[in-house]
Amino acid sequence: MRKHIVAGNWKMNNGIIQTETLIADLKKQEKTSNAEVMIAPTFTNLWHAFQSSKQSGIEVIAQNMHFAEEGAYTGEISAGMLKSIGIQTTILGHSERRAYFNETDESLAKKVDAAMANDIRVIFCFGEELSDRKAGNEASVVESQIKNALFHLSADAFTNIVLAYEPVWAIGTGETATPEQAQDMHAFIRKTLAEKYGNDLADSVSILYGGSVKPNNAKEIFSKPDVDGGLIGGASLKAEDFFAIVNAF
Image (cartoon, rainbow, N blue to C red; front, side, top):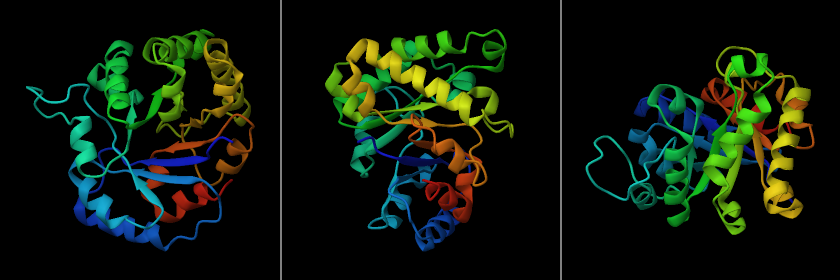
């Protein structure tokens, strides 16, 4: 059975005091669903967040990771560095990384390989721009992003892969894909996986939706059969809102 997952991407928000306060508030919330709960603080707060979240049922994850083990990559963080402080999962391929830091399918494939070699679970992000959707190209864009970065992997590797569909036009804009649009794309993604790896694998991979999920729309979005959770941005910065989404299952 596929895992339900709700992951909060804090992006470049919260210093150490705000991180402490938010984690303390999160630990006070009552969890009534079976969803896995993850938070992704900024790199400087990962160790502290990991220590503060122990035995809370909240997994602390990274927002990004470099493909090299070490070397002259100023400002970057390796898989080994993440594992050395207890981090077992990273987000890769977020639309903001693609847009602002020129990440490509090719560079992301290398990052995925590094994560797999280090037994780090990946939440792999992809999705179309508004121009792609207006042109009716959303399916081909999503298909190419998945195939170029992931389809060189063995089937076994997908035990460590979570997919996150994020329509770029619905991130931080207040716009949200309708539950039907989300379901249609998630079903297409699962079909794409099945064509390469078979139905059993496709049915086992969790696919998250990321695009302005809020407490007032999460339940309807999560009710769709191929939507297994959410990658949450702004709403993850408020403990009550985040857990309202966690408990929407």
